[in-house]
Image (cartoon, rainbow, N blue to C red; front, side, top):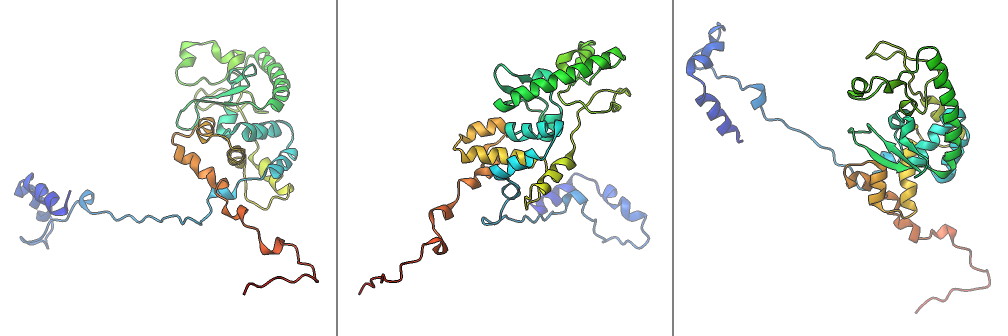
Length: 286
């Protein structure tokens, strides 16, 4: 709405005594003093900084090459290595990995169901073949730990939404247990009791990147960027990659298509050209 029309409607819908009431308490005010505009009526000026086409994105700079990604994974151990392999092999976010339940992993169809993801969206992603056996062995150890918790009167986990009231005994059942429980029982702030929860050492991934000699800033989320970039490098459909990542808009996935826009690959540097033999002369066109 234009400024003049808004101010005209603002004065027309209010009586004159109501407009002059703030001026009566001011001793220095005069009859011809102007009423100040409300804060909502003041025009707002916003400045947007446009990103240059040649400016690199954060996702581009934090992507690891395939050899470096495997080198970083080899420097992790135990549960941290298994979780990092899931981040890189399935494209999971860290919060999605630590919230994985036993029932979310389907070994028959080699898929993982991600629940309560970003934006409370649910999706299905792939389960790497090489992680089938390590995950099965890991779940056997977690189930033995869950049995010890049940023997000590514990073993309860948090259930999302109102499922704890609908299914009172489901919080102790095996399918609802976390895939990666913490070493110690933290206190749930909602219920005030100690419950198994997931844990992942974020510093371990940064330490592994430094030990692998990667000259880049990275974190556990770098594995998700590398997962997407390597799928696009292998000529995977961008719509399929969008569904695996859980992006609402394909424009978010299009950020990773920088790997497809490499005009420099068709150009060979003159430094890479082999030197001409000494006895051979180049013909100069007339």
